[in-house]
Length: 89
Image (tube, rainbow, N blue to C red; front, side, top):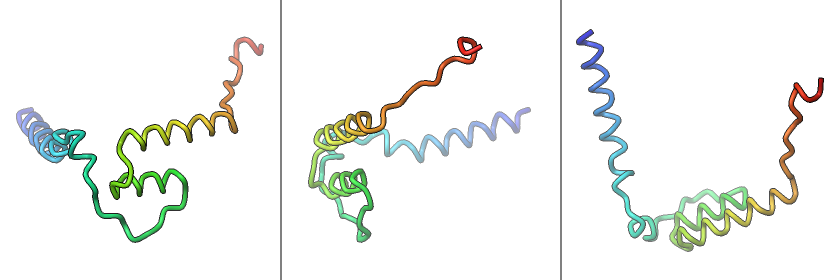
């Protein structure tokens, strides 16, 4: 029982240490330019991610562009909910 508690504590501690740098990041740090990768993106979402990662667009611009993509996708391919099994019977 003690081994299980210690093992769980160690795993949680290691997980917290690995995640901590991502939690500490601020909005100002995420807006600074970064290096772009050599491979080109295959989709519009990939282009936006590459631009965001390279620092060509800000986080707000990225979010607005993704909202526009989602709205356009919703118009082209609306999601329809199937009827309940109870109402069909």
